[in-house]
Every structure is written in structure tokens, then in C-alpha cells.
Amino acid sequence: MFILSFCLLSIIYIVKCDVTDGGKAPRIQLNDGNMMPVMGLGTFLGFDEKGQKEVREKEVELPVLWALKAGYRMLDTASAYNNEEQVGKAIQRSNVPRKDVFIVTKLGSHEQREVLSSLRASLDRLNTTYIDLYLIHNPVAYKPDKSGYDIVDYLDTWKAMEQAKKMGLARSIGISNFNITMMERLLAHCQIKPSVLQVEVNVNLAQNKLLEFTKREGIEVMAYAPFGSLFVKDSGPPPPRVNDPGLVKMAQKYRKTVPQIVLRYLVQRGVIPIPKSVRKEKIVENINIFDFELSTEEMDEISKFNKDYRVVWPSFWQDHPYYPFEKKDKPDPDLFKPKP
Ligand SMILES: NC(=O)c1ccc[n+]([C@@H]2O[C@H](COP(=O)([O-])OP(=O)(O)OC[C@H]3O[C@@H](n4cnc5c(N)ncnc54)[C@H](OP(=O)(O)O)[C@@H]3O)[C@@H](O)[C@H]2O)c1
Ligand SMILES: *[C@@H]1O[C@H](CO)[C@@H](O)[C@H](O)[C@H]1NC(C)=O
Ligand SMILES: *[C@@H]1O[C@H](CO)[C@@H](O)[C@H](O)[C@H]1NC(C)=O
View (tube, rainbow, N blue to C red):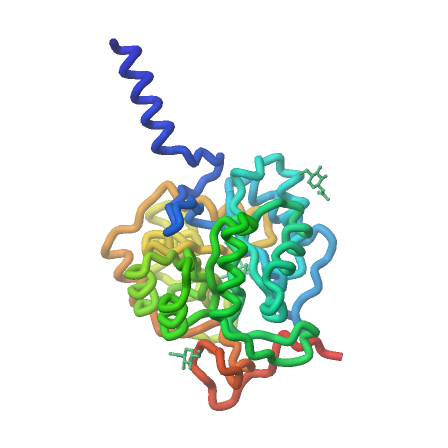
């Protein structure tokens, strides 16, 4: 009897926890039934004086390999990051089964008129047969030769994204850098709802209205730039910095670090952070946030840092009709434009 009930219990347990992917982050169910880890690794290397940074050999492959070994099971890449090949190689080298890795990649702004062929090119570079989550990177489109803006209605792009899901090339589909107005329009016309919205969320940019909206609509929010201005050296952006006394105190209480506190804060808010690091020790540090819990009081204290301040504010796109954010009086120079 005991043995029988033990077996039954085990079976129930296995069925309930069928996402034994060997990783550290639990998974949540998306609105299409697929399961997604609640944290991932960001892989965008950012910009230098010359524009978008060149990706050197193994510069992304090694961090992704370390991440998979450290218990990450979600990787965030994009056609625009020029690193999908390295992500694919790292997955191969890690020996983590493909089915246990959740790959997120994105349709580039210049690829919006060619969704299926662009997706196939991403699949080739990643050396895989399906993407777990394919996102429209930005509602702002560029001409295929990147020579300037293109005006592509995101409703048309979305139709092709739906096609990609129906064909099984992308198991889930979603959007990035869309605002509420655009999502309302998309939801009114789509056949398949987006499962995920990827936008900036951090302690400075709480996105309260956006999160209320996505919650109501059953869309999960993936947080890019999850550290906000935590590591910024100058005093321009609003606090907190990594040495903020209140956050340091919390970190000491849980024997954690301040970066771990702010990541945990996001997870407890129900958003999915994708912190980027190329340093092994930081990669390991960032995923180790699933063994403690911030109190309601601590969550409230952290939420007071919100200033609706954006780190990623591509105002150089603001004269495009589908620019999603607030406009600036004087837009910044275009970071994506390669300098001669
Ligand atoms: N959809 C979009 O339009 C969009 C836009 C922006 C970003 N993203 C995605 O979101 C990811 C994350 O955003 P992000 O890279 O802009 O910003 P982020 O993850 O908030 O911050 C990355 C910075 O923090 C440093 N760092 C990471 N962990 C640390 C730690 N524990 N202690 C100290 N420093 C630490 C990194 O340096 P090291 O690497 O030197 O450790 C890097 O300079 C990107 O990589 C990309 O995948 C998407
Ligand atoms: C691509 O994947 C196949 C197996 O899925 C593997 O044999 C091959 O080595 C991989 N190629 C690269 C470049 O990693
Ligand atoms: C959302 O994006 C649309 C462009 O499609 C723009 O007209 C509108 O001003 C944006 N809303 C906000 C709040 O920035």
C-alpha cells in the first residue's frame, strides 16, 4: 500500500513538474501553453564610439556556455546582435539537450518584410530547427538594405509571425518595444495573441501601467536592462547605485549582493529579467536568486526608486510613425548608424 501510494505520488509529482530542465529558474506557462523560464541571459554587447560593438570570436559563446553550466535555460539573442552563431555553438558545446534550452531571438528592423526567410536565417545561424520565442524586435522598421526608414504596418508583420508559429518554426511569438496603444491595436486585429512583451523594466522604470495592461491581457513581460542605472558612474541618472545603503542592508540580510536583490525584486513583481554579463562570476551570481524572498515591506521600499526613467531611449527614431516612446525636444544621435 505504502509503495503503491508512493509511486502514485511520484507520478503526480513528475507530471506536475514536467519541466525538469536542469536549470535554476522555475518556468511559467505562457498564454499559448508553452513553458518559459522566469529568468534568462542577455547577450547584447552594446555600443562604443564606433557604434554597435563588434562581436569578437568566442566573446558571446563562452558567456553562454558558462551560463548554461550555471543553470540558465533561457538565452536572449537577436538577429541584430550578430551573435546567434556563437549562441548556437555554445548550446551545442554545453551538452544541455536542445529541448531544455529556451531560445529567444528577434526579427530585425530591416527584416520586417521578410519574416519567414529571416527566421530561417536565424535558425541556420543558431543551428536549430525551431525558436522557442520569436519577437518583433521593434515596431520601427528599416529598409532591407538598412539605408533608411521603412514604414511597415506591424499588423502585417504580425500576420507573418502567426504564420511562423503555425508552421512550428517559432513555438511562441511576441513583441518588443511596443506601447499600450500599439498593443491595443494589435490585440484588436490579431488571430494569435502575443505571448510575451520584451521592454525595459528596472527599479527606475517600474512600468506600472504597462504591467497592469499586460497582466489583464495575459501577456508576460520580459525585462531588458534589468539593472537600470545601478552600475552607472556619473550622477546623471536617478538612484539607486550598487552602493545604495538601503539596498546594501537588504543584501547583507540575505547574504546576497545588490544586483541579486534588484533581480529578485523583478522576479517577485512577476517580470522576467534577462541580465547580461560576459563575466563568469557575475553570470553565476545573477542566477542565484531563487533561494530567498524579499518581504512586502522590502518590495515597497524598492518600488520607491521608480522615476519612470528610461535607460534605453532611442529618440533618434522619434520621427518614425511607429516610434513607441516619449519624444525628446532634441533627439539623440542614432547609435545604430555605423560611423565611417
Ligand atoms: N528588445 C530590446 O530592444 C532590447 C534592448 C536592450 C537590451 N535587450 C536585451 O536585454 C539584455 C540586458 O540588457 P542590457 O544588456 O542592456 O543591460 P543590463 O543587463 O541591465 O546590464 C548589463 C551591464 O551590467 C553589468 N553587470 C551584469 N551583472 C553584473 C553584476 N552582477 N555586477 C556588476 N555588474 C554587472 C554588465 O557588465 P559585464 O558584462 O562586464 O559583466 C553590463 O555592463 C541585453 O543583453 C539584450 O539581450 C533587449
Ligand atoms: C549543428 O548541430 C548538429 C547536430 O544538431 C551538430 O552535429 C553540428 O556539429 C552543429 N554545428 C555547429 C557548427 O555547431
Ligand atoms: C505609442 O506609439 C504610437 C505610435 O504607434 C504613438 O503615436 C503614441 O504616441 C505612443 N504612445 C506613447 C504613450 O508614447
